[in-house]
Amino acid sequence: MINRAKLAGVALAGCLGALGAGRAQAQQADVALVYRLLQEGRMLVIPRGGQGGPAQIGQRLHNGDQLATSENTRAALRFTDDGSILRVNPSSRVRLTSGDERGVVVRTLELEFGELWTRVNHHEGTTLRVRTPAGVAAVKGTEFVVRVDEHGVTTVLTLEGVVEFFNQRGRVDLPAGSKVTVDSASAPRAQPATAAELRQGEAAGGGEGGEVQATWVEVLLRDAAGQTRTLMLRVPADAVRRVEGRP
Image (cartoon, rainbow, N blue to C red; front, side, top):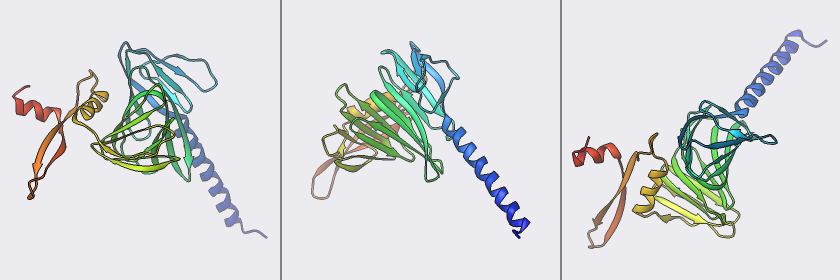
């Protein structure tokens, strides 16, 4: 005879498993929230297999939704699980997908073209990927920009933390202040970003009114051998204003 306690344990485990699966499915279905529509405020939300409509502030975005911004619209989204922030810049098209991989919730941003700025908060059990025609950027806690041009050429620029970029030709780590520019047929190679590129990256993630939150300054260092090298430092915008005596 089967022990009743064992039967009860099996039933409880089944219920907990079903509850966990239900929570995971709900988490995957409800991906992000639209909390700002800037400039013209025109963004189209197209559900997978459904008919699209204009985005509204406060609208919840679901697994498989595709977003398309007009040429003069910036949209700010917040992920519902960890509070990470995503800005979809003008003339961009991206699809939000969510799935479970070995107990980890994986958010994937499929950027067809345009530009994204993302600040990712570290959250146990969740990770974020940006998939482009040239490869995949994978992160766990960082700030970065991804651009895809009309030919599918991808640029990833890291402002804070580290981004891993990979495709069929290879992989590379991108620490803060570095970039990669690559197409699908090329191996990714990390390069130092210029001051102009880093400042442009900061502008891509500008505040609610488009103001830049930080800037990059070049510092020239000379070693004992007399060799000069350039060090890029990220400085918060309010610190720059204080140094310059501005409010």
